[in-house]
Image (cartoon, rainbow, N blue to C red; front, side, top):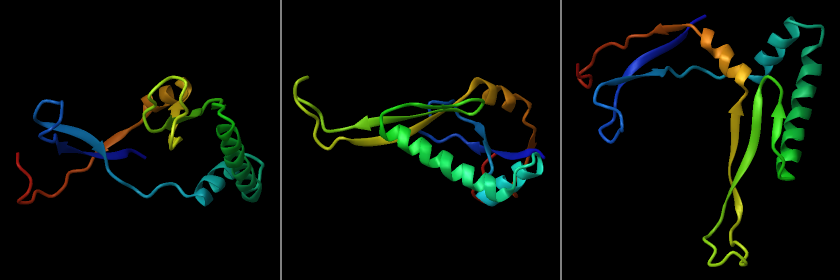
Length: 133
């Protein structure tokens, strides 16, 4: 099934030239149940077992990230954590309000390459008074 996209006008503050850019249309995300059923249908593991493994994987990722480790899952990618804090006056001072800024995900080369075969289908919106062409 092809992923649906449409063209959207570039914002005025964009670094892009004036015109339009493609964007995937929002669709419902795949639920845990759907993913478990899809995996189960392609192997001999039950959906309940897959759900258990997914929960264990989730907890393992959290445990490793909390130890400051990067987590690499073959064929999927790498998870890591970035930090933020108030500005330190000197190198020897301890940062105040140190916390996790974000959890980063970098897809593996294999995952990125597999997306090269993605099919697209343009969805054209009905023209309304807000559209300018």
